[in-house]
Length: 420
Image (tube, rainbow, N blue to C red; front, side, top):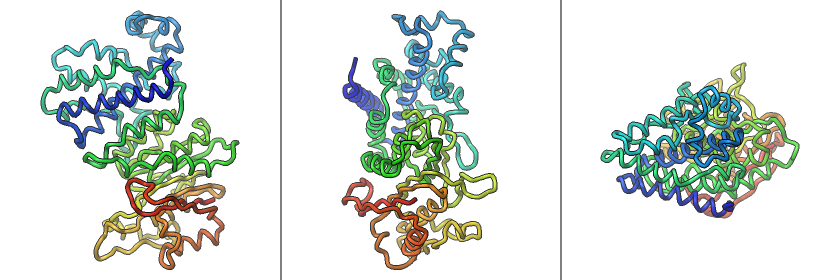
C-alpha cells in the first residue's frame, strides 16, 4: 500500500505533468491555464470517486482484472440500481463519460470535440448538486469546453492530458481526510493569480493560520448542526479548517465572494473535503453591496460560526453611495469610509466586512476575522466606533497579533479578532 506521503508526492507530480502539457502547447502562465488544470484534475478525481464507490457496492467489479470490461457486462438498469445507492457526494458519471472510455477514443478524428463533450456532459448530468450560483441566479457548472484555449493541435493537446491521467488513481486514498487534501489543494492553486500568471496568494490564507483560527473557535466537542459562513471566502481555506474542526457531517457551509474564479476553486475545495452538500450555498456576488443569504423576512441570515480574511483595501467608490441607505443603517452602524480624492484603491473595505460580520452572528455565535493590526490602535473614526461597540456589547473575546509577512499578499502586520 502506498503511504499518504508517497501518494502526495505522486499527486503533485500529476499536477506538474498537467502543467507541463499546458506549457508545451503555449499555455504556461497563461490566464486560462488554471481553468484547464483545475477542471481536468477535478474530472479525474470525480471519475475515480465514482469508480471507487461502484467497487465498494459490487465485489465483482472490485475483483475484476479489467474494471471497464466488467462494467460493460452490466445492463443499464443494473448500473442505474447501483448508482442510486451511491452517496450524493459522488458525481454521477455515465459509462460513456468515464476516463477509460475517453482513453479508448484518443486516436479518433476530432478527439478534442469528444474530450470537451465528455466534460460538458458530466457537468450537465450533475448540474443540480455541483453547480455554484451567481447572485442573479445563474448556475456555474463544473466544466466547460477546454480545448478552445489552444489555438493549434487541439486533438494532440487533449490526448496528452488524458494520457497523463490514466496512469494515476485516487481510489485508495479516499479514506484519507483533510491534511492530505489541504496540501494538495494548496499545491494545485499556488501558481495562479487573477487573470495572469503569478502567485495565487490573494485567495489563500496560510493553512497553519486557518487551523489555529478554527481550533480557537471550536472548543466544544459537542457542536452539532451548526452553520458556518465566510462573506469573502476566496478558495475556502478558512471554511475547510472550520468544518474539519467541527465535523463535516455536523455543519453546513455558506459563503459569498465576488470572484468567479474563487467561487470555482471553493467548489473544488468542498468536493475534495467531503462537503458537497454545501455547494448549493456557495454564491458568487458582492457581499457588501448585495448580501445574498437572507431570512424569510428579508433580514440578513445569521450564522453560528463566521471566519474571514477579507480584502483590506479596495476601491468601492462606484457603489459607495448605494451603501448609505436606510436598509444598511443597522448593518453599517459605525459608518461607511469616505471616498478619498486620490488613491481610491486604498479605501478600507475591511471595515465594512467587520461590521457585516458583527451583524451576521447569532446571539451565541463565534467569529474570527483577519484585520490590519492598525485597526487595534486607531484613535478615531470608524475603527474606533467598531471597537467601542465590540467592547461595550462584550463581543470581543480576544485579539491575536501575528508575525510580520505571514500573509503572502501583504507586508501589512495583521491580527485576528475573535468575537462571541
